[in-house]
Length: 85
Image 1 (cartoon, rainbow, N blue to C red):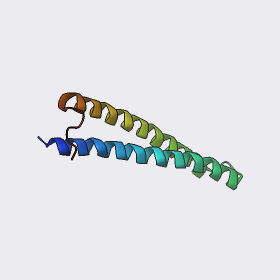
Image 2: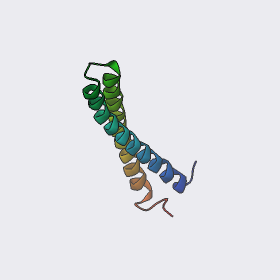
Image 3: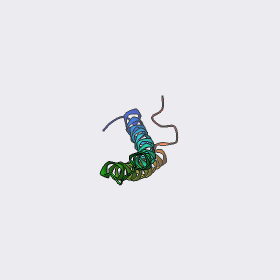
């Protein structure tokens, strides 16, 4: 069984990846319409960019929810500052 520090670090990594997914999703959701406007045609790449952005945004929200739940369970079991250096 990993130590408390390693468990907290794993939860923090989940939160970090969730933030990365949210930022990338937001970027691609903005880049998709820009591609469609600039190309002046209904290019598949613009729609694909929108789809990827929506997917990453949803993935980030789900990952963020899982990491928050994991953190709450960890802190309820071990205490609020367990695993911090």
